[in-house]
Image (tube, rainbow, N blue to C red; front, top):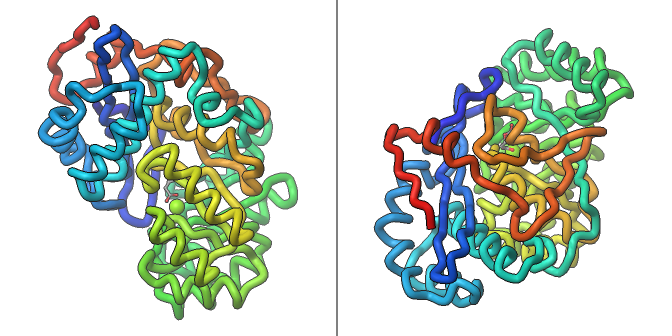
Length: 368
Ligand code: MUC
Ligand code: MG
């Protein structure tokens, strides 16, 4: 399904006017339905899974493997998927979310409770300024500072030439001063040599955190930049599955990791990556693939169980969209998101909205 964004969202690899989500409804023989979400950014421009490939792979490969499998044994179901399906971590994350939602509903507990319990029932949430226009970004930040919805702003800067990007960031930081923290996400757009000058300028401008300045594969380069600068460097695209996480930790390639359930292949794996980071004294940040409410709330359940998440989260995905497909929307106030209460994810699908936004226009509500 496609949902329009509240404004164009400029990233280094694409400009988003809508978000496409694969919504998973997993029916169990005891009558319980679990819901999950598999979402990426900009078709195939951000990662190797597209919404279309995810739907096809779920229908063709995942569903036959899960039919007849015990839905309350999530470890077993995921082991079966891992054995027969390589990669496809966003799909696996969506399916695991649906299994956890169903299990929570079955036992009458939240997903966070299934994962050991929430340490906090609210999480800090920043906002990404990416309208493509410096003045509009400043106005947007002022509006959210005034109404208290956000006090940390991330700027997506990989799409402009570096000199323009630095002028854009400097102007926004100057306008906001100490009233807001400002971070930047380069989304891999710079060569290592460009990054040396770029990060030096951003550090001088008072930027608090630099995300994924160079190509995800160049983890030695990321380690060099991390050592070179005082401003913390965060790995996003470089930090994915557990093997990549281990390599990053060994090289101390970044000070901070942007954890995402989609990159990790699910909620359990994202918490395993967090454990690797904790052991290496790498700080944590709760990232997003700009999921809607289902994926963002699933992420929030996992992140809420972590001892510390020093850099907060960017689980603002639902706020970037003009509408929602759940009945009980998530509450965002005082720069925080409130974890929905209730069994499983604590969400209820709005089936009429789901039908309305379906890309294929078909109405196929199945009441289980
Ligand atoms: C990314 O690379 O961090 C997160 C926020 C946003 O605007 O885009 C995403 C992806
Ligand atoms: Mg990023």
